[in-house]
Image (cartoon, rainbow, N blue to C red; front, side):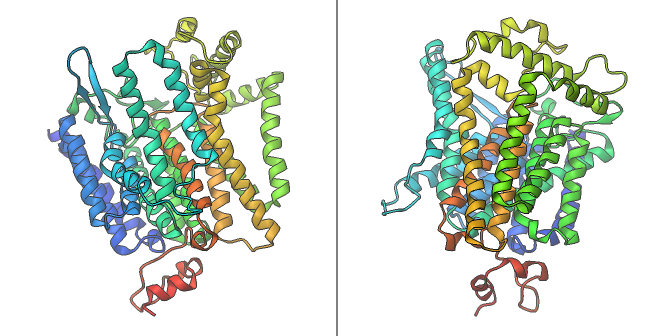
Length: 539
């Protein structure tokens, strides 16, 4: 108990420092009340995580904190989404498997994401779905992206249905709905104006910088502060309590693995650019960038490092190049990467990565493991290319690691093995449609001759973030909150693109709290529309 209290005291201390350090950076994004409210929810979630001790207490307490937090923010759809996104990244991987009756082993695995979906999103989904239909109202329109998001989960359910029980099939459908469809529906239908995006994404960003601050704290003390909760709750979410890269601790904050934290931080870098890109010269904004980058480096996850670099290049190209040149460069890069792999010219690339990243005394290279995995998987996929390889693990025993697992550290390979090339095509389809839509949006503004504005920044940053996330999952499996973050990277642009141009204009700009003199903070003035400024100043 004393050990847990020490960890709690450390995390709360880091949180207090973060609250004070990041306050100015969020001034033009969240009001003082909203910012304080977000950190109070983080405080309650942290205390609950360390003192809950029992999985049932944690999940019930999490639901109470979530509902109370949303009510304190107004209880609207956007406030529920804001609290959902904040707590999504703030809560550790404590879960509760509800026991079944009769021949059913368990009813459902209540992860924190599913608890938050039930507590915060189920009601708004019912309300949005039951709204009276209006002509040309995007809230009820079912589009190609909706079909694409739904297609892959449906295919997976169809493929596994013959080999599992009816109870297991029903559980899979419910879990898929809570994990994927419910958040996607509420985000795409519930975020209807720039003000909604401001609040929801601002709260998500608060959660991400808090997670990054804890990660930096772990670097300072060289100790993972959340992994000790496994013994406290009697739940295992990782094989070792601490992962090292040479003499350095790999930080993981609230996540179960360093690479998942690196995925979150890569997402956070893109989100902060989307929210604050126009203000990057401000020292307070730069401070957040520094914290995110230091935390990302401290994960010692090399794939996300490269993905973050790719995000910077993609964003710079999207902003600087004419749309036609960017489109040609973007799809040309993808074609060149595929050609290099098919022709075997990637050998020199792997050699360079080994020289750059591997430890001198490493007995086996993780880069070599990933390449061997890819070669073995491709050989299996060729034997059964369309709907997957049954029991593919039996054919990959040579890849079993010391922990006793076959770690398929490539999401695309895992999808192709599970569901074949048809499944892989359906899996990447929502991301491809989103990329095309964002590139088209940049093209529309360029053709109209409009100056660079918040919309250009939004499209460029959202595009670069999605590209970086898709590159990252080439080096890891998708689990914990990674599916939800990928979903957000698709659903938020979809919601933004659904908005009428007039409502979309203040997309990220923002209603900031008035200063003591009744005006706006200096760094926020260029981001807020005239109407919003007059509303804030009470005119």
